[in-house]
Amino acid sequence: MYKVAVFDKEHEKDLEREINHFLKAISDEQLVDIKYNVAAACNEDGEQLYCFSALILYRA
Image (cartoon, rainbow, N blue to C red; front, side):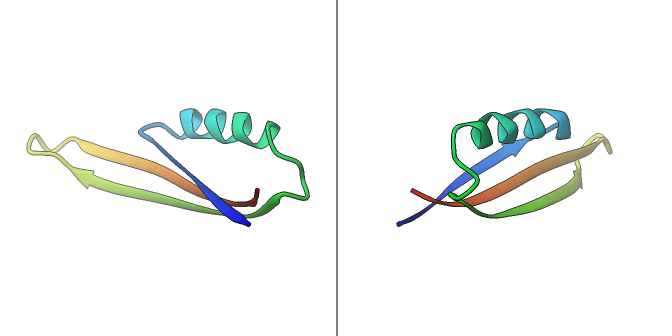
């Protein structure tokens, strides 16, 4: 059976930390794929906002 884990953070270092923590909990054989995405937008004040996300596909 396959499962997914989804991670979403405002800072790339936070995402990195959370993914590394998750990867320590599974074996190399369980890991299938990692998809990474960055989205950027501006709020009403013109401030740039970022969203760093990753989806990990793994065998349960």
